[in-house]
Amino acid sequence: MTAPSRTTVLFSSLTALVLVAIAATVVWSWRDDLPDPLASHWGGRSSVPDGFSSLKALTLSTGVLVVLLLALFAAIGWFWGSTATTRRLVAASAVWAGGFGACLLLFTAGVQRGLTDASRATLPGWAVAGLLVLPLAPAVVAALLVRKDPREPAGGPVGPDAPRLALGGDERAVWIHRADGGPGLIAGALAIAVVAVLAVVLREWALLIVPVLLAALFAAMFAFTVRVDATGLTVRSVLGWPGTHIPLEEVERASVAEVRPIREFGGWGWRVGRRGRVGVVLRAGESLLVERSADRSFVVTVGDAATGAALLNTLAERSRAA
Amino acid sequence: MLWRIDPVSDEPLYAQLAAQARLAAARGDLVPGDRLPAARDLADSLELNVHTVLKAYQQLRDEGLIELRRGRGAVVTSRAAADLSPVDSALAALVRAARAANLSAETLTALLKEAMSR
Image 1 (cartoon, rainbow over the protein chains, first blue to last red):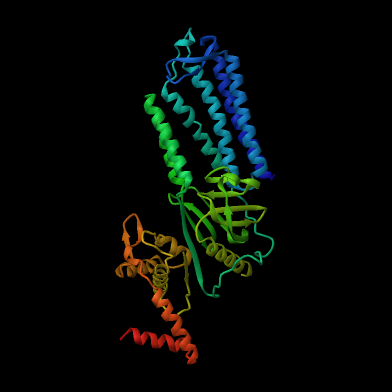
Image 2: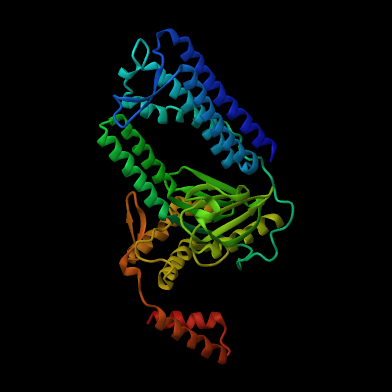
């Protein structure tokens, strides 16, 4: 656990709680206009509510849901937040959870203002889509506010047993390889199809924004360019975002490793795994593993990783000597 | 794939790049449909002028190894897949013979160039 991860967890959780608290205050100020009990759940057809609860129970259950989510994200940040990427994910997730809770309260109660009978309450499709999409705005802001990793040069030489490449003193070299596809893409396509079909079957056209956003996310997350050159290792989506860079001075050792996506990272994509290892994991098998200063590590599943690792070690060593 | 250039070599930089792409295609490291890196990326990483990389790509296109398409970049063509195994085995024999005759690499290269230009 590091000081930056403590800051991230603290500020993002507080922001989330404040969002929920504001929403709860607003909703409670409406209480004279609201039916009692309130509709709190809608079935497949949004026009027919099938769950009811008091305002107090609705506020409480929303609060508990958000707190549980925050606890999960805090644990990830606390134990695995050694890299800025991870802290960004944690900050965005926590703030999104708070925004989700706030929107849940506001929309659920908002659509019932002025009603006396909660069974006539309807939840329009835009509210459901808004519930998922609106909190993304503060979440993105939170992610952008997380400070970059400070410069942290490795203390010692590059691992002496790590592979090297024969490179002349004047020679310049770059290794570029593409990493794309993999089983995660199938899971993504499936998720997009399911949500799209659901939106069409329910005739909730506003919900279609969710598969559109998912498609953009998967397009960005499943084709990367991996590059090793005199600046270090750069892994960037072919769309330009997301990406990450490890400067040569932070490389302690690069090697070839076998990745098991489910066991080590719980799935595919841009991942945080055991002991805070960050992974761009598109498939099982061959990958380039970089052990980095300050007990961090990064792995990307890519072909010809042996060449990439050897060049990275060689260039890192050259930069230390300079 | 790995790209390397030696700025102190007599061979022009663009020719060094083109030679590596040809070799990679011959060895099967580049297969039809593969994309070469964006010229800008390659130039940045190797600290070259982007026109040097573009010159290499244009030469490869003229040879039919790659196609340059707007928006898609440089794509290796199906023509690129040539079987070099006979050349490899002949080369091994040639190197053995040259060593037996105490020929230097420079002399052998000169002989080879002369033979190729006939």
